[in-house]
Length: 527
Image 1 (cartoon, rainbow, N blue to C red):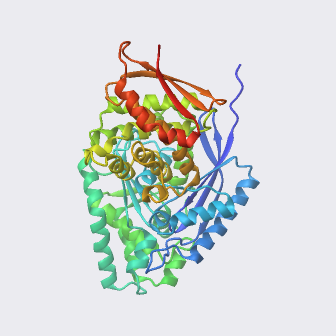
Image 2: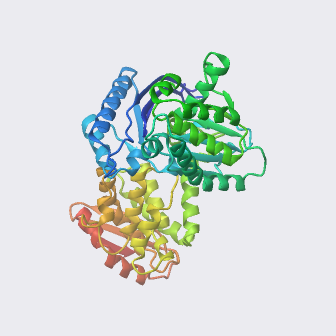
Image 3: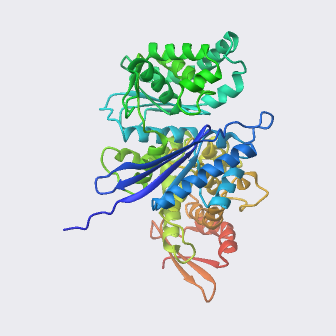
């Protein structure tokens, strides 16, 4: 009889454009599943940025820090063992967004991961899948945030489409609404803008769908507000829970028309909590999305990004291995897709990765203490290090940085993508230097140290496959601390191959390793 797997208490925090949300869950690892034991929400309006500079304001950051401190108190009182925190649209776009993340860590000790719009959409999808069965039928999921709207197409397996568009309830209210009630002119201008922004993603989704009508699932505070208004007016009460509540396109259109006629005070009374200022813009985004998708109705889902963070954590911990198993390899498939897009020789990339990982594994606990997560980042960088040749062989290491950084890799945070791109950037030529713009973008000290310590392994691995024919079968390392030497035994794939070019390349590229570890690299062929 085996021991039962203990339950774990985990928290997830979403630093959004309008609000900061936290969910605390008990993860039942033996099932695996989770259930919510506490939630917290604070409307911080982080997206109310300086009109001239686009910077997060001091007032908004201070409100956010107070909300995060409150989340931290709740987490401690509930004995939370790990807090997963992400920032989205407002922090992504603000010039001082990274400074704000640094301030959060310095003041509260909370490590915040910045995620891309596509990665946000992927994790929203995971959150919805934890609440609804899609039964292998294609569904469109819409999440309307303060700064962006995510549209996802999937049937319960791999998402077929992920998008993030810069239309959000806070963003549009700030940019387009100055009259109260909104004037016909501003209303029409806002309507046209929303349609223009959503036209491309909705067209791409419709082109990918083979069946009509569109099955639409909605999540987020803006959509919840529309559902609550409809429920109060038609049922006279609010269903508890609101999960699964349906509204038709005509219902949404009617709510928009009502809100259009109201002033701020009236909208504040009608809408839940502090949504009076932004509820109209949010409802209009939903209305135009449904119109463009020809969606007759929408089903509301209470789970979204926060729960998706929990599911993603469970996948990374190896706790999910059934219906969400496909997500466990999302990183690998995303890397292969990017490699194919830029004509990377996968056999060569995988050979370099194999040698780099062999060096990483053998020196773990001797030269470094990085773990499995960082090992995976090295593997990705090794596979993609040559992708810049798609643009030009000249300075291809710099091109590789750009392609990886902007390649929309899924399953990674922005800091992890930055680390991967920097590793690829430094597989040849110059070592990391503070004067390099790409290196300065490694604002996360943890990942900067990782790049400093691990980039020499990738340089050695590239040297060991100089002819790109898999000439080296493996390497064996021995560290002589007394003599300050790093002995590298090279095992050729072909017994009589002297690996002359690989040894020459290694001599040329070993300087970065020797400088980093203060060891003399001594290579030799297996006798």
